[in-house]
Structure formats: C-alpha cells, structure tokens
Image (tube, rainbow, N blue to C red; front, side, top):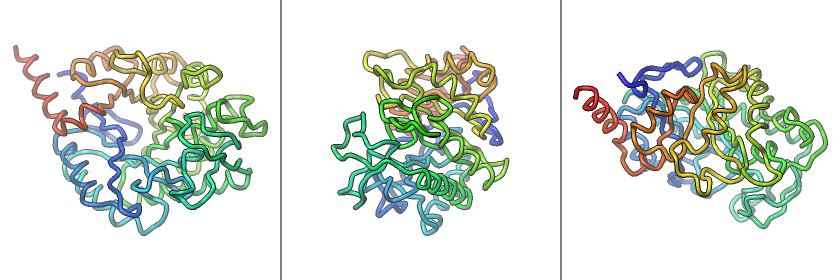
Length: 339
C-alpha cells in the first residue's frame, strides 16, 4: 500500500490516511454563523475519504475579522451550528479541526467597526490595508491569548478533534513572528525568535491547559516571508522547539507575508525548504509535519511522503476543483499497484 493511504497519528488523533484538506475560505458565513453552504462544501470531501479536514479560518474576536463572510468562533452561540458540521463530517469518516485566527492589521475598520490592532503600529507589509493599526499593549496581548483559548474550548465543545492556530499569510500571529511587521523591543518584540513566538507559546499553553491531552493542537506557521528583512527558514527552525515545548502537536507549514504562493516556484510542496530545515532539527525529527503547496497529483503527494520531509500532505486547489480527489487518488494508486 502507498504511504498516502496508511494511517497516521497526528498527536492524540489517529487519521485513516495522510490526505488533508487544508484551510480554504468559502466566504459562506452569515453574520459569522455556519450555513448549509458550508455543509455542501466540506461533506463531499469527507465522504470521498479525506483523512483530515482543516476548516477555513474562524475569527476569535470581532476586531480580528478579515472578511464580512468569515466564520466566527468568538462566542458560545456559534457552537450549535459548528456542532452540526463536526457531527456530519465525522460520521462520514473524516477527522476535522478548526482553524482559529485573528487578522490583526489585515482587518478593516469598515468591516469590524474598530481600528485594527497589530504587534506594532505599522502598515500591514502585505499592503492589504491602508489603515495604520494600534500597537497592542501587554495587557491586550494577554486578553488575546484568552480569546484564542476560549475559541479552542468552543471548538472542543462543538466536537472538533482539535484546532489549527493561524500564524501565516500576514495575519496577527504572523505579524508578531515577522520582523517586517514586528517593530517592538519588549518581551514580544523583534529582538529574538523566542520573543517573536512568545504570544504563540502562551496561546498553545493556554489551549493545552484548557482542553487536555486528547485535543490536537496544530499551528500553521508562515515559516519564511521570502522577502528582504523578513522571517527566514532559519527562524522557523529555531521557533519549532519552542512551539513544540509549549504544546504544538502538528506543524502546518506555509508561507508568511508572501501568502500561500511563491513566485516562480512550481514543484509540488512549495514550502519544502522549510520542512527540510525543520526536519533537520532535533525537535523536528519526529514532529508531525503537514506540507501544502501545489500538490495536485497523488504520485507527487506520495513522493513527498516517501522523502520523509512531511507526514501529511495538504491538497488545496485540486480538492477545491475535484471534491472527490481523495477517492480518485485511491483508485489511481490501487490501479498502479495491481498492474
């Protein structure tokens, strides 16, 4: 049997295979609430045999809402709708975790009704907004840690197998990790990788303390900005031991301020350089790693898994186009093995 269709234990959660539906926004929420469009979006991928589904990002606080049609997990009234999604998805045989997020300086006042916040009072390096954010104070940072924790507890109450803490693509936690956005010089400042991931570690510890050992905690890390003066692959390798010690079960690798694509990079597994750097560290040697980016064919996914640089593969655009991608991949791999 191919590695792609072998079971894998991602921390406390056993997956039936290595195929992951990564976070991809549907923009289908109504006032932050789940709709039938979401069920129509996720269930076919679960029914096709996908091992793990990671939801689109859900905001943990209204001030961190990135889009008016974004899902929310900022209050308890979100739980009943989300519970329906988890029940149906898990009945179809998939495991599902909720991506929890805060947009930081990528939020817009016209959407949230509030001035955006960030690690520092500088414009978003993504140039997605012309609004200068307010720099978060230390008490406000501690309050945000609590909001991520509360969101994770709601996810657990709604039946999710875990959460994926979003620190990529220029959102708030990425704004702390990236020197392009983080201009602070305090305990959360740019002067060391340890300081730049301090808020991440506090969030991870708070979630673990509140949800227990059987709840999967993943973190999507924008491991490199691929921009002058930004976060580097070496920074990611230094961050991983700190994140793992704080409670991270699964590293979900992506890009940073550059988003989820890299100009000119076409080989499957766009962020494999980050995965290779992490795998080469003592903390990363046996750390479950999810790699995404340009993976369209099952043979490409299989090759990445067999190389040893990752344990799970995220199939994004191809699965958005073909909801039954996993079933097709199974048939194709079986056919090759039988001939």
